Length: 178
Image 1 (cartoon, rainbow, N blue to C red):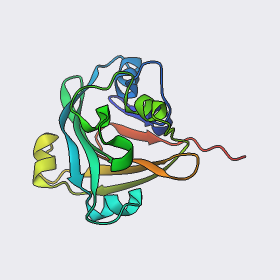
Image 2 (cartoon, helix red, strand yellow):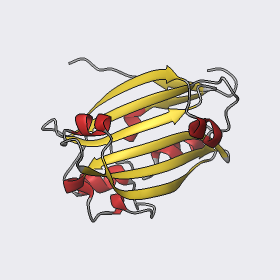
Image 3 (tube, helix red, strand yellow):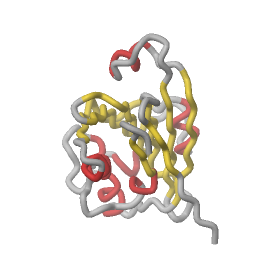
Image 4 (spheres, one colour):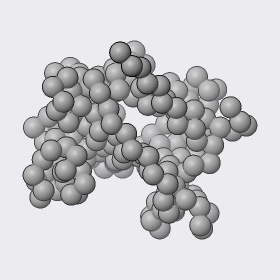
């Protein structure tokens, strides 16, 4: 691993953990401090891409949680998480308070354990708002990781859109066959 490079393993974010905050635990394991700020949360009309992936009718509402992730105090990732309304309405997922034990634990406690995820990663140029929020230089690209988490019966239960600077990022995928 190169100087200043951090490895993110998606599998850590799919199952409930004892730490409750895999982001913070991952940073601590690297000798760093990972924190997050919830910018907003609540019911919104699902963007078409979100509706399609979550399997909800376009124009319908979903629950959205928008966060800024910080590494050693610097903004490094914008994370928007979406949940089907029938799963998240009236739960901590729809509010701006920190969720004790984490969102994945709450989903599992509600009977929606993720067992499979689909991820897509693209490199693109950031919007002006993303560039400013992440303190990027003009002309600097971002990585966008979209993760769809599915339950045991292949029901979409969570969708994340993470926008991050590629500086120092290394995404690791472990695949088991059989």
